[in-house]
Amino acid sequence: MKLKKLGNSDLFVSPYCLGTMTFGEATSEKDSHLQIDESLSSGVNFIDTAEMYPTCPLKPETTGNTEKIIGNWIEKNQSKRSEFILATKISGIGYKAVRNGEGINTKSIRIALEGSLKKLKTDYIDLYQLHWPNRGSYHFR
Image (cartoon, rainbow, N blue to C red; front, side, top):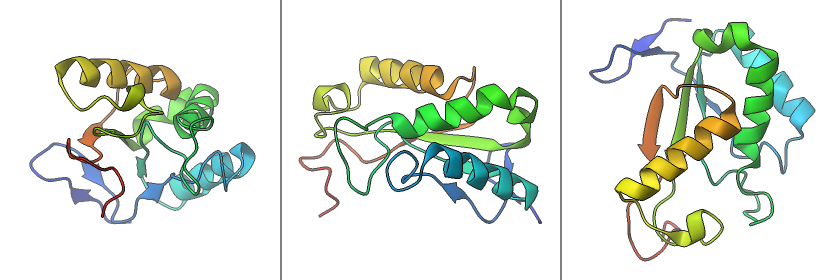
């Protein structure tokens, strides 16, 4: 698969990305790990997650489980960590199950990033993004 340069960075990503927003809710951990394995073996080197996942449906009691599932895969496959680009996101203001709905600021970025690193069981994240800006709703309406 031909890789493409990601913006002005030194990162090269596949044109396809494994989205993981259902890992831990609609997709079991076993099937999630299988999807990671199949994606990497097919040339996909880009995995996207977020501190608030899984969704479908979004529930406080499952928030953060997607990163934990990916972290369990990374822990079992340490030698493969350098083979893919891992992206995660901090949630903006409003969703109470993530940092009590606190918005994005210097303090919350540090807390969210450290939490993601711990759940993902890795010492680095390749791409860190803002899931949505600090606005009045997280419902994309």
